[in-house]
Image (cartoon, rainbow, N blue to C red; front, side, top):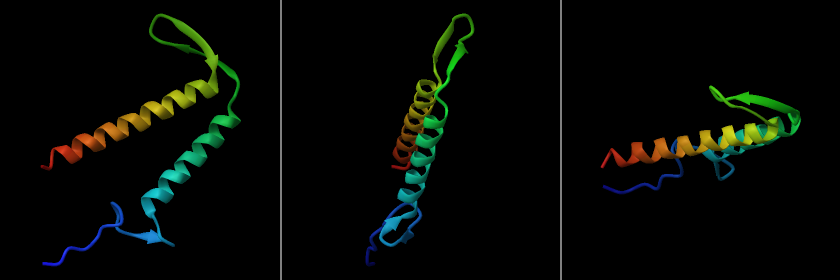
Length: 82
């Protein structure tokens, strides 16, 4: 059988750019816009201690944790198919 190249997870693209790349780019742009629109200081309560920090730091941290979690889950899912 002939092997066909795969251009991404969904297999489609627009103008040579995969749907996945477009989706990731849109998420990053919207996240940066959201962070820049929310710069007030907030207090965060972690069960007992309460911390005060600028909201943009909290948002960047939450986005980073979400991105790392997605990367980790994707890596574990791909490794379990072997």
